[in-house]
Length: 532
Ligand code: PAF
Image (cartoon, rainbow, N blue to C red; front, side, top):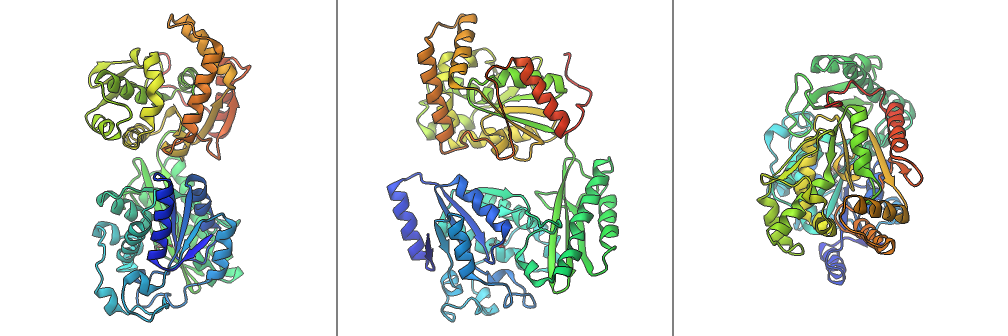
């Protein structure tokens, strides 16, 4: 592991890595140090998803108000260094304030930014509608300081992905907006809140609390959970959620609620009632600390994500499982196939990434989510059958590996899942498209079994008689391509249930999925679709 304090050294290191492997992926975890289990979960994810994992440690003076805890904020570089080393981090970037702001201030000291220096810096001003609510009300200038430092870190590191905790939900929404508005080519990866056994959300500021105060503070999560319970039982009004949180927290007088609010998780505008999703956020004072916590209230039907390699029987199983569960059916593979069909039909070279990006821009898909009558059109043309041809099958992986294609499709797929109530199948549904799916299944089968099934299918549909050895080779190659590609590789989500379909009939696989659904989610609701 390397530790750099200068921007020049960090850039030099990254440039060397990039000249050795131009498409090397870099994951950045921006932190203010005092690393805890919450940070470590971000770091683990960055380690898993990128060739190079960078952790920045910088207590950013711009995001502290004049009466806040900048001077006292916990700093322990030596311990952070050890934790990063153990977590397999490649680089720590720990600049001093002078290095970050290019100002001749007390070199080496992070304690030395006077307001006058902040005033002479160019800063990022996020939309006031996003900063005038929640924590922004009592922390004027805080999110401007966060946005400024995050933009600087993105410029310095130029990561492929940057990782942020969901605990700072307002920060996350503002950073997503910043990146979108400035067209920054980075993936912002939100990571779930990590909690202590008591439910208290992990925070560097928990260090300010005694054991007793920590126990008292854990009421915040219980209060959020009670509000979630009321929400789940059908009351979607903000007034109920807020009253529930306040009443529950009032049980512990040492916990002084600063605010409880229900807002749209993306725009942060206040909600009267939750249509699709609401961010229920609280801030409270406990002893010397100001703590925040939140929960997302989702008003949507469940999502079942089914991922797995080509030929594992996903399409048939997913469609039938959707019918049996009374859910809609999203065949994401068919979306990529439709685009492949259009690339072939328009003679667009599939390896020409800019040409494919242009093609995406002029493509529109129409599809039917009814599992009983699947239909796929691209630019008005019905390609439901044509997308199953060997020519399309041979090139679809290549198309799906283009970043522009992926971004376009993922957006469409997430739109389809906004209200839930779908079974979606693909390669990155549980890991990337719907990481919060209620049930994730990884459906697989041995290469031999998949080749055998493919051979039968080709024969039965009169589309050719190909030898088993050839099919096995093709399938193994496709697996290799899908799981090693840079963009959205095929990977089993950590919380997915694996089902190997070798030796199982289709109805046995579907029975297993239905049993898992009942166990994890409950009885399937009456079907609005089945029987059509
Ligand atoms: O969440 C934090 O630790 C900080 O706000 C961040 C994103 C590192 C910016 O200083």
